[in-house]
Image 1 (cartoon, rainbow, N blue to C red):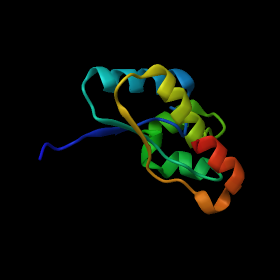
Image 2: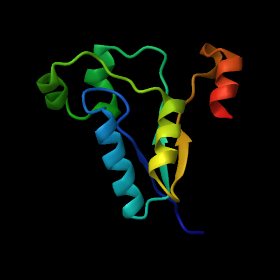
Image 3: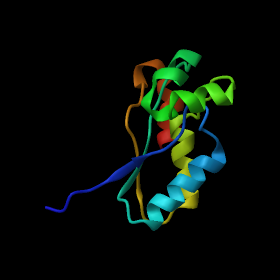
Length: 109
């Protein structure tokens, strides 16, 4: 069996912005990675900016001095589907119990 490798995108914290997400996604696809992953969170705080692995180094967080950013998971997947060609897309964690089931079903569809 051939191992598969994916990339977790910068969708939260001071490194998160549409250009960074696009750049990492297209580069990962160009390099032959198998999947792109986003994660979900209901509320994102400055504490998570300082401690969550997806946010980069503590120095990057402190230098940014920006409010906490978090790009919604399912919307990210739609954005990624429009800018990639073959790479698979996934959500590492989807906080489904906190979502409106009708809205979530429409987003996933």
